[in-house]
Image (cartoon, rainbow, N blue to C red):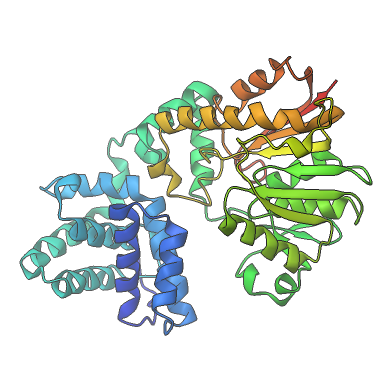
Length: 413
């Protein structure tokens, strides 16, 4: 039973509701909605900020299951509800079903208050009735016949797609990892070793001093597999926020050079922030569209100048849903196909920068065959600028031990 109470200001749930409205109704990303909310409400206590974050991220993460439950108890179908009522109900159901430390009565009463505060007094009875019914019967909800994709808390198309790739058992395991509270936060130390840490890492003194940095285990493997040698010239074509570029710079031990590029000045600023914090001197930033050929990166004969080209490209992110739950609502098969096209436009250009004998690393944080294995084969088919051979390939599955990731290392002959 939900018995433990939390001491919260009256505004915490209202702030969370506003965030969720931006996320669900205006398609804003969760982390941006939270960032803007905390900037607009600097008076929120640390406890309130933590609760708002949990409430927003959890409601987004469990939205598919929440909407399924609402469809059982609301006579008005979820898509037909007034947008603000839809948000209030989702927030309330999340607290009732998934937050043991919040009493059901508090969640329901606050939802009714929010409804009235938004000038919808006439719908407060409806909100109260729906949430109370769910609260009464919540212990038996999952004993009913529930669709597998709802149990997995994945969009139906994504669940079916994963099954075609990995089978049902592995798909269910992946889905369970995505909603598991035990998802690990990896940090990399200056000496190269990795640990799992909990809590507000970004506020720690050793983080601010650059002694540690947040970087998932899977992401770290890209730089390790790149295996840079002293003096290597390295190009990271889509580098923001700069974790991999700075990692490679550390592995170079101050020798060589890493040219960390990205599309906009905003992204370049993120890279520079990491360069300063991590105290690396052999990295520079460049604002450049990776699809546009840069003739300074090839010699007069047309051969590439780079020992290593890292192409960690924009992708659908299906391997990191556990950390970015709103990917569920933003991803689509059409989007995956569009991203494959973009990835190939970038690859067509950047392969030309790899010197004979040099390496190309292609990586994504997704699980799709379109963006992973099919692009591997696309690179292997590139014979015009020199034949690439596959040296290493690694598909890390979510939870084994961290995010889902794909890495392929190619050598140019």
